[in-house]
Length: 255
Image 1 (cartoon, rainbow, N blue to C red):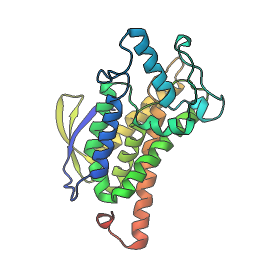
Image 2: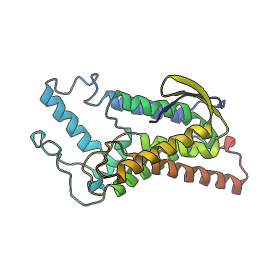
Image 3: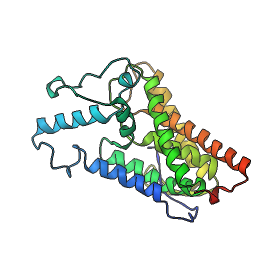
Image 4: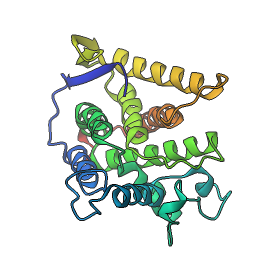
């Protein structure tokens, strides 16, 4: 997701991160059952059949901007030879897209961030609120991407928007931790949590601006989802703190 690959956070969680680990398991299992994974042997084995199965999968379960915003009834298939998608539920695809990944590195990269930061945020705000934060910021990220690409026909998939929301909340609720990270994947460094997630946001924002507004620029990565998912996470984190201030309850006591 960025030039910094986190390995572990030094905050000692006090309860098993059930929700974070369940989300990781669901994301991994969904990928292993998808046609682009070699483990899904029930899909066609021939090249053309497998390609069409993959396209059908992404068109059915990916969040497509012009479908989401009602600009078309249903997006046209990317390859006419593979046929149209019948009976697609747009609302279901928006939700499902947060658990669909395009390849092994896509799912591994996202799950590493969730593994490092998810347990910390879950411990700080409670399991139910963490699940709500993950889903709400993920949906906010998907729709933010759609609004910035209203005529888009490429399916958006991946948990990056929701995980960006987790990072945004982390910046609010546990920025004092120190995180061991690999810089450019090779140099180990121990950095303040706020510096790592702050640099993540700055990097994603830079990529969003340069790929959105530079002449001739473009990207298959939904950087808008990363940016607005992070902002939604910051807002959600602040909202949780505001509730704590009003009730006088410590975050560590909230389940």
